[in-house]
Length: 567
Image (cartoon, rainbow, N blue to C red):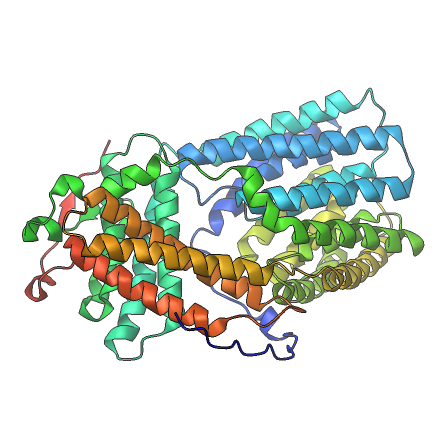
């Protein structure tokens, strides 16, 4: 491994236009958009019928849990959604009890900031998201400033819990229709991304970015398939074989047919039969068909890392969140704001994996909120026609936010801002000019103070995490190379070593990218990272060949068959 001296970090340019550039919408943008409407509408309309729309803020807290876990298999989604509902209820309980015990605004802001930091750390450690901690922080911070009595707390929590249970049912509703939908989408994404990488390799213009994206997509597909720890079905085994084919393509992109990968991806994305690939190892006689996914069974039996070990590296982000949210709330109070939680939530929404991404999110948040207040001013006359009109406007904003936020965060914020302003009118109408002015001021305060706090709290551990990731890749590469060279290596050991090395490479790239966007730190060993990735990819290719996964040159055009995947 080279020990080349790292290149000093240059002064960074702060992106503005690039942060606002629109991307492609998510393949499943309509799922969270429709889910949140289905989760919010029945409780809200019931309260309209009962004449108690003032309680809709509590039911909406539970309903918003329907935004989570749409990319997870249904067995895993059931658990994740349950934990999200419990986490929402926990934050809401703390907020309601605090609000019932004190009206001191400084205390309320402090509690809100601490809750935001905890929610940020836990959501990042467990990778719950999108929308991660922002929804939970919005719910807990807003309810901190709603006058309460201790006697009201149980009833308000019961409303949120009932709506949360309904949101859980909404999230699980597609399971009978497409029981393997999330796994299919993840597999299709892996195949499509690998096909794009193979095209660059076949054209003689191999792209490191395309390769990293392909490895990340394949790794994500494995994580999705492994998230369902129940007994594998016929469909899931067929999907696993397709991901194996994507891994083979990564090892030998120049010998891969991208059109074939895309054809498989298109077939998987639908609701028909899963394409069945031939088993190249059976043809070569090196391993039996039953050994094909032996590494998958081994990985499925591995317990996840304990939560405490994942929280440690997130300490700087948690401190940034707590400090930034608290200072934003205090400054808002000093300016005479009635709703300092808007500034608090704005600050909480900024914090990303590094300072560069945090800056981009600050730009997106400010632009989205400024356009959003104009939209609120436009829809206010309609929303004030009556309680039903108000609920319908809230539903439209919910749908628009989830439909657009995948293109860019600022575009989704255009609908999130009027949604938050309309929610304040559930107990009664407020002066429009005052709401708009307060929201603009609090947005600017939250963005400026929140980003200043991010600058003040540096992440000095970023470089050490890159060094640890490099060490992990070196060890995984040495193990895989040793097993690939050993004539007596078992199929399970080879599969586990290959998957372990692939996961280490993905983690190294993610760690290096996150560290590269961090400021005020020592220069990073970029050359060592590139050399480690190149060596790991060569070892992965050698391991794939040792396993007999690569077909003979004349077999790449073998026709595929289909397999009935009905239960």
